[in-house]
Image 1 (cartoon, rainbow, N blue to C red):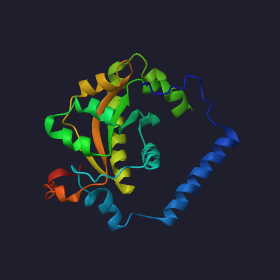
Image 2 (cartoon, rainbow, N blue to C red):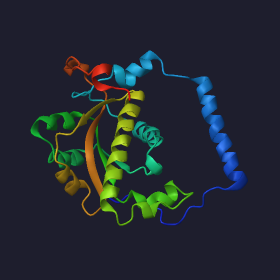
Image 3 (cartoon, rainbow, N blue to C red):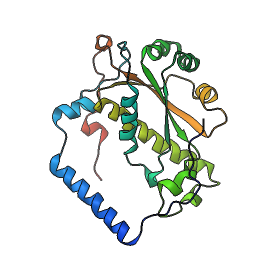
Length: 230
């Protein structure tokens, strides 16, 4: 499985066309701010403050169109230089689940097998090859070509950021999520990404939760414990 590449240069808009696009973008943001200045308390609770990680699932499928909308929302989130290195593999088939189970710690297998969807959140180490498409107004490929450590750090950082967008977007669409790190990245990479430039980051179960499996929320640090001013 290889990420799509865009090797042909993409011409960035200039002159009047660039000005028109900039004005349209500014108008869109201004119009949105007039329609909605902030989320309601319930909206904030749904995506973060009242949301929970889930480990038990209803036998209710997630439609493909919901997954496609989930990706479209996730893709709108910012990344450095618009690198967009994250790749999302939705494991839904019994065969795919069996392959994924090889990588999991024993206590996580049942959680994954019961979830309607398990997403492998991965990143492409050669994301920079797509920059003529993603960042067309300046060729930034020389920032990364031949610099594997810089590529890996950039892909991991921004892919993780996109993974967070993914979880919040899923909750915003009415899905429940349960992220997992109790697995072998090496086995996932061998099983799903052999011969590619993709590397796994973490797993995320998706679906409609069975809330009867929930426990009380664990503690969080206070502002004074976690934040400071300089």
